[in-house]
Length: 615
Image 1 (cartoon, rainbow, N blue to C red):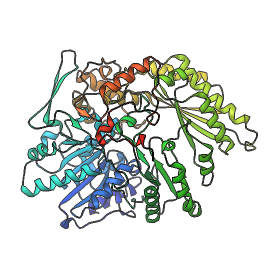
Image 2 (image 1 turned 180 degrees about the horizontal axis):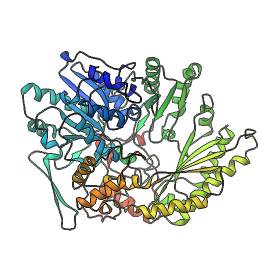
Image 3 (image 1 turned 135 degrees about the vertical axis):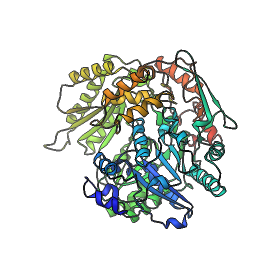
Image 4 (image 1 turned 90 degrees about the horizontal axis):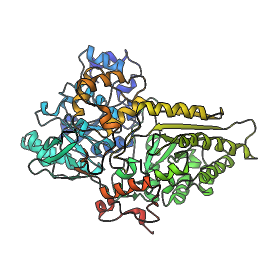
């Protein structure tokens, strides 16, 4: 670490966020590598260190002899103040070197409200925030992650976007950058060649024109850039690179445990869920590979908890076999196995018995809507009876608390649907007290978390209007009135945060100016309740002549050109439109293992989808 950095570390809270030196970090001789890569997470250390994608790509890049990947996180306010006061640019944890001198800077975009942090980190690094002002080949600034599916609101700041799975795509990009660097080629030469790699979107090579009403008229590629950019996928999860060790933090982080993917994609097709559609087709990892991954990471890192990561853990076809393998050694080693994202309609007694063999983690289920009518609209395919029966099984298995996730502001929602949230939570409470074997002296707690629905790209609801902040506030107050017991605790997401998320999620390039000016006025860490400056944002929208309601609260026609229509995530537009129409008709679509709905994503995997495997 540089001496100037050492001098300021003692002046900030949680200095371990900035020191590096943790177990399993990768240190290389920078004189012996051709490429230096700064992996930037646009939030604090505690959040970024919990992200599985960062763990995978950090190890993948460092597995190359010619490259060194180092970690970079957004400094907290106290650290940023010291850095700016003392003229210290943004630096990487492993070496302490300033990232402005690296060959590539990569951001992972997991939520829309990190955009101002991206600009702030570039500025802290001593780099121009606008792509056009960074004229040299290096550092190339790239971004990937869930929000890359609609990169238009920050297209002016990023050189290239990576769409889809990054493991193979990252190596292709680094190979090209190494080649262009060796040949002394220009940044423009690199961008034109990068645009030919599947999954790479170069926004500067596309010209956007608008209609008089503010909607998009066309998105036209320049030169040889493809008309549509198709996302990249990993076909075989058993053979793809996976780390055998994780960097172990010195301080508590949000999810401090071993995390192992069990499959990508989702069979369910909930109409609000972007992750479901972005990650199709479904691809599973075998129990033997998962088990070995877990063993290696636990041995190298000392973790005592394993989280099996997927969008719906109980939909993994070989879950009993996997748990048997894991429990054969984790029980003796006193290692907990956690199963997030469980389904209430797929929670067999066998699973409860398996989970009872280890430390009991909390149970979380997501009915999403309070009435069957609305659950049919969103294609949740979960009944009230299944919620109650699953709660009954959990309580008989010894659990005394259940978390339930719901959304407010869903299309066609009424007051009866809102009241249904309180009614369903009360029925779960009642089920606990019906259990004759409930623990003596212990009461039940049903924690109800209610988020505000945000329409997202590449979902059947991408054309829908988001409820206005006033409408959402009214619904929250009504739900509070409907809950009449202290056994049910209510938690709401902040409405202004959901509103801004809705603006950026479906925004276009006109928002680049807004984001730039809002950041210049001090906006950053916008997803943090105590940091969001909503009045500053609203003021900035007005100054830029941009109506945020145009993006958040406006229903789109099926014929409208959407800002992301030139990007292909495999899902047919006709399929999404049909699902939208079925929502308004109250019709459900069965999950992928019952019948293929021809969403189109299997074309990205040679026509194969593991949802239909029979082995």
